[in-house]
Length: 117
Length: 112
Image (cartoon, rainbow over all chains, first blue to last red; front, side, top):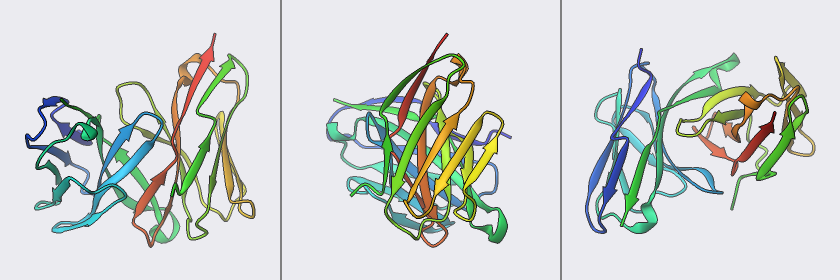
């Protein structure tokens, strides 16, 4: 059981370049999330998905797109990278637990460190 | 507008001491409050969580205290150890929201 994996681990982009970050989970979780982590700002939600084929915007969606074509994969795309997108990106997945199914334990991947120059 | 406010930003505690991290929220619809622990170079991992129908939850040396009327909750780490040195995040969620709001994080340093 690998849990949540992210590819790549590190990447350096030039302004204007595009790239896709891949997140994969083998726990059959319905929900998946993309966050960015910046110093002093905690984790901010970019986009999320509550099931295969569905996506929704989080707190900071501008400049990013996502797709969830398969239940186990959640892709984050940067169409035209900007220096402001330099960050550490975390993917997470979760399933409802607890009484009534309304507790969500999130499992995080190891992160992707992206630098845009 | 930040949904969950966390303090302090950093904390230094001597080995054996008590570490206390505080969080406050505004939205009364939140009904699940987890704490995550993150070591350098790793993703956050769930440490302990509480629902608002209880005022305290304890797991080993870690305790969450929850004050529903004040809309505040805190993490207490008893007998703090150097291995507890990490960044801690509080968060809040609601079943209806399908998403989490995280605090800004607290970097804890436990000195031997």
